[in-house]
Image (tube, rainbow, N blue to C red; front, side, top):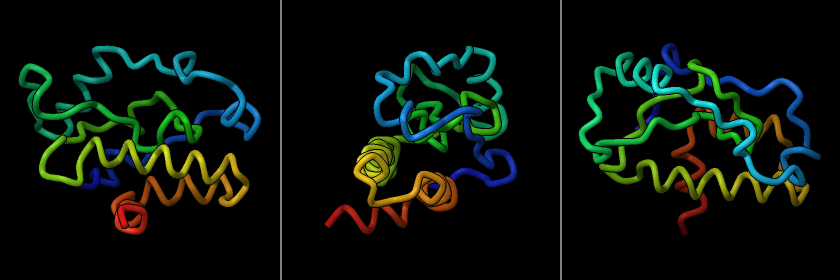
Length: 126
């Protein structure tokens, strides 16, 4: 499932560079999603969190690719049907590795994940 591009267009973090993305350590310093931000994301999509089983509030452009902890970058991503949240995690890891290895431009990785991460999943799952 892809997010609604109007509700969740994606947003990047000011000051995101290859240095802090590839050699900056954990993304914990950028992860400040509040309960109110999560509730807003669920509300925009008419989703209901049911004991953490339906979905997770995810960053469309992942923090490891310079995504912002911003309501415009959050959406409730379901685990099912597949490909779902866990498969998008694999896409995030793949794109991060490609960027840090110099095989993919950071801006291009951000575009790929924000416009149609499923295309990347189809490419890498083989």
